[in-house]
Length: 242
Image (tube, rainbow, N blue to C red; front, side, top):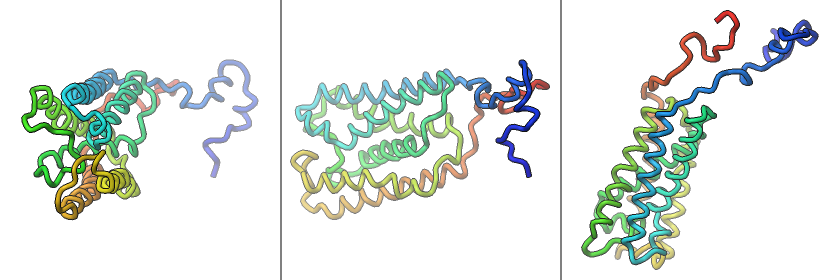
């Protein structure tokens, strides 16, 4: 059986425009698949996360705790990666690896899930909160715990191809939340006050950190493919007969 990646003898010795075209790999001449609408959506996602962080920074009296919080770190990472994915979608470059985008999806989903649990359960992962939240804090919580996770999930479900998550991701993604959980329990002065009985909240957070990747992996294997714009004739569209 011949190797399709090797150049035949006739092609190797061909001259002129025909020979140059025959020796050019398909990936070098395939048109870039630009997706400007996906780029705009991801820029809005990044703006949402950054606006929530900015409002929380202006309202908090404990900037060190805010910088050390899992929510702030996940939101900042989501914003930075969303800018990168927006640029790649706009220019038609190769998408960011699902290993990274899937990890951020589970992290912002974890913060949203823990935000709706009792305060004692989510204490190691919570943002600095005042007794009476201000309007800025209320808006920032809406942006960070509701709009950002929903937009991240919509980006995953509607703008990315399915079955990009792999089984090893299910144990790789929980590594950072579990390490952060241990850090928060060992250094409560920086990560936030620990509950009086930290074992139950820690087990709850650990279980959620390990289950969310499995849920995302299972959904990714069965969800339908979004209707992305493609070449209607062929995937590459470079054949002279097409």
